[in-house]
Image (cartoon, rainbow, N blue to C red):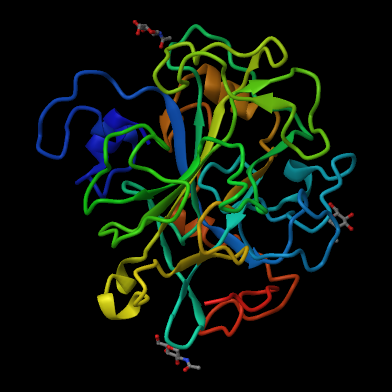
Length: 364
Ligand SMILES: *[C@@H]1O[C@H](CO)[C@@H](O)[C@H](O)[C@H]1NC(C)=O
Ligand SMILES: *[C@@H]1O[C@H](CO)[C@@H](O)[C@H](O)[C@H]1NC(C)=O
Ligand SMILES: *[C@@H]1O[C@H](CO)[C@@H](O)[C@H](O)[C@H]1NC(C)=O
């Protein structure tokens, strides 16, 4: 995610906590500043399903396929008035067991240009983490340890990115992008700064493609949700959240600082790094499950579901990584991957598909 963190993660693949890695870069050079506090943990795949309780609540099937992680009470409706995530979930695919939230994103496919069929791109955990595909979830408080950050409240939800975006209407969110990953570590730039792109990368990525989805960090302090699920939150008007110790300046309309929620998925595109598999016209072969070959439509949805005040305590403690000693309970990766639910919309999402789930033919 950010310079210091990503430099250290390059070679430390068996790392269990970030703080173990704090002192060294891949080449053993000490890094000048400590890694800022953040929760960073893996949530494995709960299910791949055509459901979208925010975008199309109650609709079975929803228009496009999602990967969904988190608590197992996820379903098509999730009525905010009645759906108690911590109360009705009996497990979570996240390694922090008090996190019964749900997170979901679009799914990446490869399209074979010769015969037009699609196959799903495998996912791999971020460096230093393990799991069964899924998403790396971050909750990042302001980097200093004096700025107050308000954890979300039951019923809170939000989304970022736009499933209907297109080249002529690329969407309003600056912090949803693709990173063409190097072999090891990271690129060292801020997420969604150059050379990260809103569009799919145009060449082979030796470390796969990381999809980065960063939610806003300022809340209006009033609404748990609003129609459209986005206008109750905003990005800072001044100061980059990741570079400003107090998280920057929130707009007057959205004065309350909330943790920066970020979702990262690494899509293992490396089996397709073969010229014969790429279209002859020079275009790239990856698509989102929204039937999007350009890349603008990746999006992330969030329904808050931490138990009691656990998230607030973890933010106040300014914990690092996937351990928050004495504050949060964890389960092993082996336990977390057993938390799955069956598809509600039973359909093929793997193998070679003539069409993406729920979609029309995609023009070549
Ligand atoms: C979703 O779960 C709630 C209980 O939490 C239940 O009342 C509702 O009927 C479920 N909706 C669907 C579509 O399964
Ligand atoms: C399409 O191409 C893939 C290989 O890229 C192959 O595995 C698959 O069987 C082909 N499907 C058809 C219908 O020819
Ligand atoms: C807060 O940050 C300061 C300066 O970085 C540090 O000296 C202090 O130990 C921190 N306090 C806590 C409770 O982490």
